[in-house]
Image 1 (cartoon, rainbow, N blue to C red):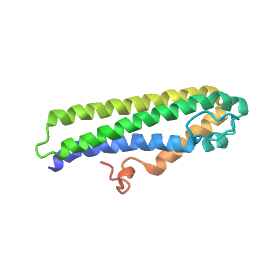
Image 2 (image 1 turned 135 degrees about the horizontal axis):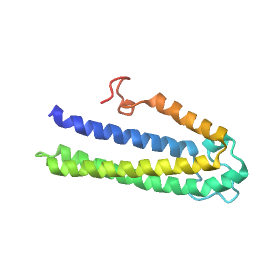
Image 3 (image 1 turned 135 degrees about the vertical axis):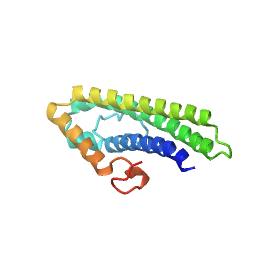
Length: 162
């Protein structure tokens, strides 16, 4: 029984870490109430305000940021559904290993889409930010990832990640 939980725990841990980094990015950058570009181009994102982006930078960043938030939300929702299905498959009276493996593959594909989306978004941001702003952005990301660490999303003590 416990051997069967090992791969599931790893998949869930990786999925939760990807979801956490994405949720952190979305929460940190903020967002307009209705998920659309704010008409006055005020910097509504706490992250970009902290980076000191100029109004011109913000006019270029905002539309792509809103698109990123919308797309990442759709991917997160899909991953949530896949994880729910995975739990149902594992919890079945007679688990079907092939179905579980196929669901794991779907989850990994969704995680890859999310990772690709985040990387593309960060590369676009880097083009519009000054070198100092980009350094500050990546430093904030590193600090946040160190605070959480692998496995911490599951409530495991430090150093006991699955």
